[in-house]
Amino acid sequence: MQKYDFGEISFTAALIGLYGHRACELGNLAFGKYNKKTGENLFPENNFIRFAIPRLRYEQQDLESAAVAVKILYDNRSSLKPIDVTYGERSRTKTF
View: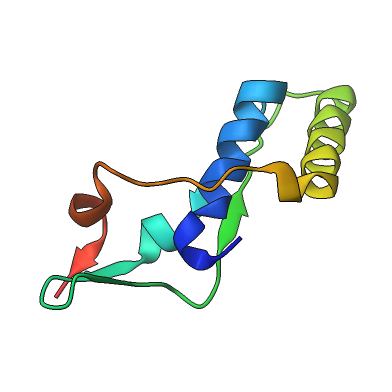
């Protein structure tokens, strides 16, 4: 996937849709910039996915299930579809 495919969003969508585990993308959409003059997206250097684990909420089997789901998605990453952001792209990124 390329940066403009928003792979981290595709990954997190598949993670919750297929396995019920929530995560949050902290990459191109969260920290990218949009240049109004050129209509170009400027992407950050790094893309991250954040997993928040509430204390006293999950047991070991829950964490292991999340790890297995991530491994399955990683092994099949070539089958994840690119995301075409059609709404909120310009309003959710910093503009200059």
